Amino acid sequence: MNKLLISVALISLIGFWSCSSEDNSAEQKNTNNETKLGLIDSDVQKNADDLAGMPTYSESAPGTSQRVDRAFENAPPMIPHSTEGLVPIKMNNNACLTCHMPDVAVTMKSTAIPASHFTNYRPDVHLNDGTIDIAKTKVVTQKDLDGKLNMARFNCTQCHVTQANVDLAIENTFKAVYRKSDLNSKSNLSDNIAEGVK
Image (cartoon, rainbow, N blue to C red; front, side, top):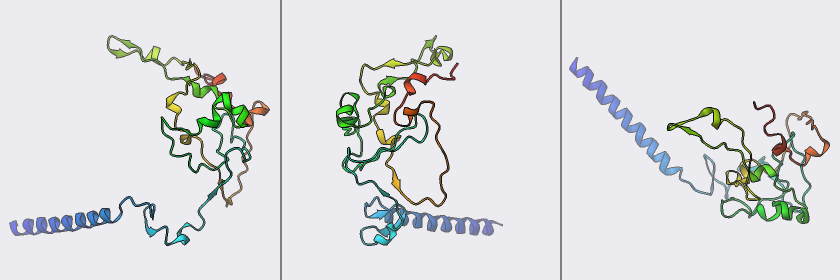
């Protein structure tokens, strides 16, 4: 019986060791290398065929592209222009603000950042004897930040994305319905954010 247990333990140990050594070699082989295409072990620079069928994006410079209607009322608008050189967006380096701040958007003919991005909607945390008072904390708040961008929203590409030029295999028949005709190109979220909240 002891010989059987020792044999099983030895086989298990050898199997575990061989699996873990294979995983380590795979990890070493799949390093963060910009010439690799995701998890595919293929050199992107040498094998352009791997990129065939990948979507293309607008190459229009900011200010020269045609706006894309919002997908639905108050949906984040799509980015209709190239983002080359504009991303990644950092808290202290956000090129989007150059053209989209409300005070310059009119002259730049760009979409102005809406009031909702200059408002803090997070409720204050109210403590009652060291515990959070849920009743007071659930209150919907709207604190105007006096023209300062709410830094919870600094990363524009978290919600706003560039429009890909693709042929759809299945036609999109969705038709957006806006309560006001101009809401296909602007937001009224700050006016009705508490709609339906009790």
